[in-house]
Image 1 (tube, rainbow, N blue to C red):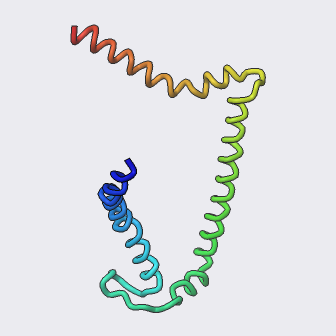
Image 2 (cartoon, one colour):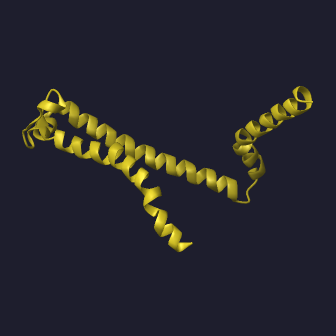
Length: 129
């Protein structure tokens, strides 16, 4: 088993590694390089150093956007985690109404399977009999 894993490891890893390289690493490196360039198209890029960053941090709109994005990220991460923790507590603790809460919470997952079961029952009993 171990020998066959070593033998076929490149066969399975190479396509994924190539896709990761083409789809993520190369565009990421290009974006970093282009952030230090002045250009209208990618082919006529000329290196200007940190001039673009200096200009960006002088702009009050950019600073407002960075501040708003940072605040938005902090608030949403905290709220999502607090909400998820509250839901997890309601689903697992032995408190009054836990079974009702579990029913309400898991009902959307069940409805799709139930409807699918009825559709297959209709197909097998009605149309294919």
